[in-house]
Image 1 (cartoon, rainbow, N blue to C red):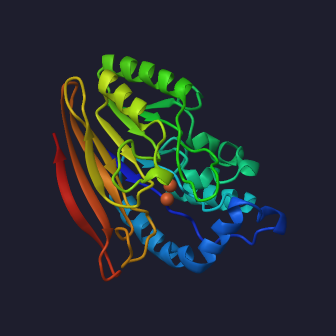
Image 2 (cartoon, protein in one colour):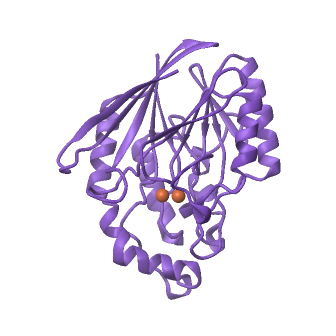
Image 3 (cartoon, helix red, strand yellow):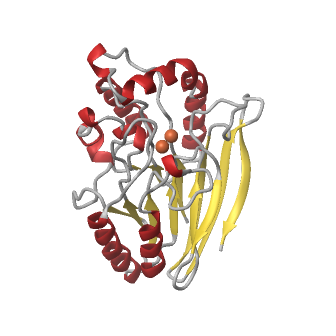
Length: 293
Ligand SMILES: [Fe+2]
Ligand SMILES: [Fe+2]
């Protein structure tokens, strides 16, 4: 049995004081939005309780699917690294970035600069990368790129998709349990035009053609389970809420998932345990248990 924990979208607070020169373009509206609304939604105290509960479950590995920061201020990345280190060392925690981690062009290199060792393959490769842990091949994709104001779209690009197809093929043949990590969901009712993964259709085609055992994502801030058609078996696509959202809100309260993976090639059994903050905000409780088949 291998236990993978999955949390996402912590949107870490507090926001450092921005320099005036940083508040141009998209960051200006993002900053106003944070000051008016989002700082009340994403609470550090709830995130701390979620992380404590997750650690008490002693998972074998932790996956984080992006949106660590908020408006990509230069001062947001080092504290976010501190938070990653509080989860565990780079060997035990795998990260892919979200749209808020690549909010502005000026800090485009900062995720690699500060968090690079959490988002590299065993061979040092960048996106797409692979890490082998137990029976798992964790495949990390980056859909994060700077976009115009009011847009939160993601894109993988042809080159990344081609390399991704080859990795699925290779690790499928090796009989691994292939877990794909991406910030944007490949299919979503919630991700409307301005939030969607632009190349969701080619991603789904690639998954259908080459297969995968599980895809996990963030971005929508809710518990979700959908499926992509596979050549042999349908592929579960699982989303988690933000790890810091206060109840009651428009999304699910702060939560995370545990995937308990058992079996072997062609006969995997995966149980998903969703845990999160109770509706009254007082405790971390089990929300639901689902067996994927
Ligand atoms: Fe997010
Ligand atoms: Fe996002």
